[in-house]
Length: 258
Ligand SMILES: [Mg+2]
Image (cartoon, rainbow, N blue to C red):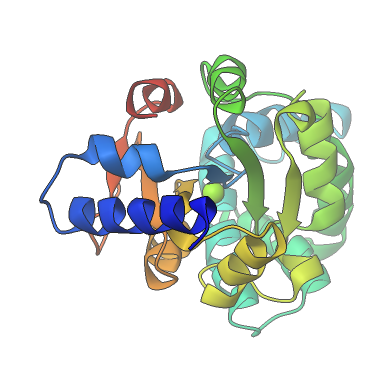
């Protein structure tokens, strides 16, 4: 056995001991080398950026007289966005339909049945939103700290051309060794094959890897199913079916855990 094999064997034994609770999470942490981050609502503040982008568009197209309750419109958009993303993940609708339909439905819910206008707003939104740069508090500081100790990657279901713009514009690119986009890989979270593809392509092991994300179904249950530990970023106290390895309320807590 080479020294490399011995080190790997020891790491596996320590990892298994930690998993069954024989020793503390300290050992679990010491086995990690690779951190996989979700992007939307984990690093990039989707809600704040959608708010700004729609506010710009409503101002430019004078839509506030048509839809005075802007906050209700945003809530509706967020609701339909999540609903249609779920349909898209299941292969029930196409990408282009989903992108426009979420706005058509949000408009309709506000009493505006105008698919043409919704389409126009949807197209401007797709150009505008990725230029917004709001990230959660302490994201740059935390990624700076973690990138000195671990290899960092993005693992996202979002559309590739949009996600790359968000990452670049928000000043996040330099922290990450590689970006894994579901569209490019052909599998989406929670499909374990997406996680396995990413791990294999960087020649890593599952017990050296950690998934950090905000979605209980795609990020947390997906990673757990693939045999990868998880950090559940849960500022809004969402319910999670499984117990994640860690749960945090702010991204800066990663500097304490890791
Ligand atoms: Mg997310």
